[in-house]
Length: 582
Ligand SMILES: [Fe+2]
Ligand SMILES: [Fe+2]
Image (cartoon, rainbow, N blue to C red):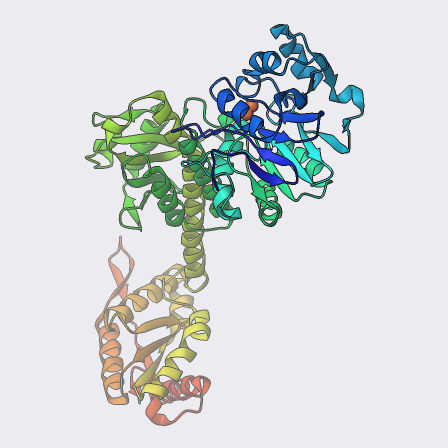
């Protein structure tokens, strides 16, 4: 393909543009060869005109140009019109445009005929060529439109479908490749995705074989549908998101990162996934070392620490620090960068400079702060601060979600503990047996471990209650529970089984060992004194009867194991109490 010659892109349709060196923003000019009613589309600038002119001359005489279609009034489209008028020198030379563009173009005072598209049914008949004009308002000009050649089904799309190309590419290489180039252009140039979709709706009513945009590359039929499909989900008007950022490649990348971050939060991904993705995106332009978030928990008892450096959640148990964190975060100006160590730095033991922002809940209540640990020399201008500030919301959202989950988990654990604990003795209650003893029993069978139970019942407890009252009764129960706990290992489990009955589960313990544990408990209780009236220094003594059962008794299930221990405990009672039967 020789770019020095006109290139026929469809029947009698030529690319007659010229390559502008080192320009990502190439401007293309197209020519429809149509006898003495030939048409030149978006004639172009004075920079390209000499070559455009020489190329047209290779096809036909300049005098054959009757129509100049100007899709809008930008200089890259109309700057050469003065020269053209002079060179063509034809009385019926006509400019075709929209009234909105003409309202501005008339100021050039060209002595030329005007053909307004909306006044002419959005159509042009030029000999055998029939063109239709498609209105694409606000893309990127209020009166923007495209031209469609019905014969070849070619769309001259003006700025729509334009792209930024690092190197000159007359034809798009693939849908994926060109979409990336087109995306940066459109996100920045076009006002909104709704408006873009409206324009695409208008265009897609026509069968399309070729799209010839004024910038970027020509799109062949096979790439058109996939590109339009992607464009429909593109977010445009990203200048509305970033006020100070001028670099549009940067803008586009950051915008995608923002979108992505919001999406992954919505998809319930973890805090760490969110901040890693954000760090990765920002590190295309900065050096963010890590993101650390410090938040108070629901009870203002702990500081929850989320650290992207270690991917860990930690807790600082310090009520005073929580209070200080909440106080200082409410004084924090949004988006402040601290090059000098701040109060928060010393409070939270952070040495590095950071961009710090407060994290608030939906009621505007301060919950803590986020540190973006970074190289401060990179943060110089309002653009950088603006960019970092845009990522505050997704980080805060991810942090608050993580906090909510952690607080819920903690509450669940506490609630669960409550349901399996006896409030008086703080031993487990019977529910614990239902939930865990079966598991112990199965494990003992599978691994041939020992497993023994002690059923402990206080002797003559009714008498204690009747004689000394229920308060003393409760004190006895508590004291005995403590004594039992003092005499067992941390792996053993003591349960308040009923009123004055206790069950001790001894994993990995054979019958003989269990018998000795029971003996020890019995003796400790027998020898312990329970103070029931501190003033009078009255105390009383209690005894217990204990039945021991073990897996060596070959019980078929856990109920039987308990039944055997219970039976033996009653046997101990029957034999005179204060003894162990195993
Ligand atoms: Fe333009
Ligand atoms: Fe343009």
